[in-house]
Length: 113
Length: 111
Image (cartoon, rainbow over all chains, first blue to last red; front, side):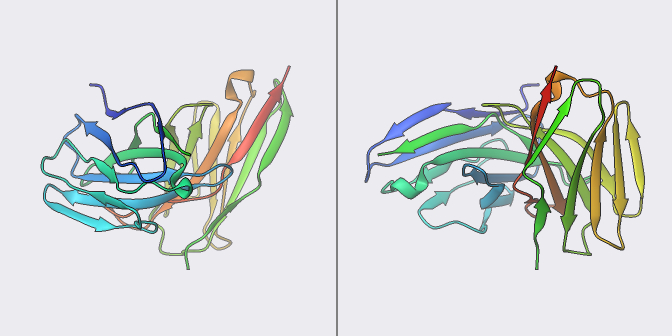
């Protein structure tokens, strides 16, 4: 199993551009999450999904959109990129039962200039 | 409210024990976790403890939970240079909700 995969690993955007960060998991997990990590900070939740077709906002959703058309995929869309969105983005997934632990992808490092 | 606090830095010598501390505020937390992040990498789950336990041991790792004081600690025995990383404490209230993370403790191990 590959676990949680994210693409791209790195990206530089100009202000006002848009892009989609891809996330795929092959563990058949119901729950998926997008976090951002700013330097010296913990992770902040952007959006999450409890299953295909269902998404909800987290703590810092402004400037982002998500969709969940399949169990495996949970892309994060940035429209009109701003310097404040410079960050490392992590996708995670977890299963319905068990110990609720979340499995993380390797991250996408995004710079907006 | 929800908040997780950790000290920011810890420096130890190789072979010593490391103790990383964490305090949390939400008494309804069900599971508490320790994640490790190496430079440029994602977060790797190290261990977790259920809220009705007070200790869990897993090889070189010992987790202690004081639920009354809302205090969690991670002890790494015989610390190695490969243990140098950022360690995050996180809490979960229920399945499907976000983990609440501390800001992370940077562990530096010198030989």
